[in-house]
Length: 221
Image (cartoon, rainbow, N blue to C red; front, side):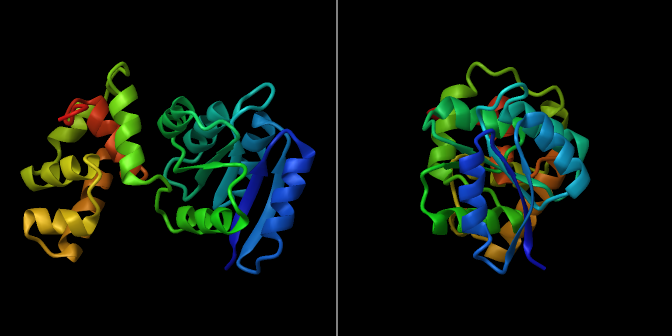
């Protein structure tokens, strides 16, 4: 089945440009276009796309608020939000992650990068390099209040799972974690899945956010 995509942007030319790119692909199907955040929430509820391409700056309800509503409205549903913006600012990336987005891409990215991003998110992965994630969280999590459930969630982790989470937060890949802890990659993947499930987060990027905001890992450590 092709990946279903909802495009949310207040500029008609931008929406048309994205649709033109995506409709050249047999493995991607555009299921709707939203003209603002409220429209995106409504269409996501009715169409249930695999991926939402979400503009940050829109009138009325902006992309970050719309992202929160879409994901709150469908807890556990496989809807991934890819934030698209012309603003290359860490603040937008971090707030997008806190809103629940799984990826961040500039609007002037080449078409092949957009296509790759959509498939990455549809496969349940996040689209932010570990080094970038570490920089962002290290900078902004210092002032963010810890999520109310974070302490209890961390208590559910085994000592090994806490080790895995710390290494994830430090930007390690599964292969690097396996080498560090002298484990197989398959075992690491199992630990990562259990960590995400126990923390109640969508992907490893959001696990990193929680690890920093709960002070399990501190900037510069």
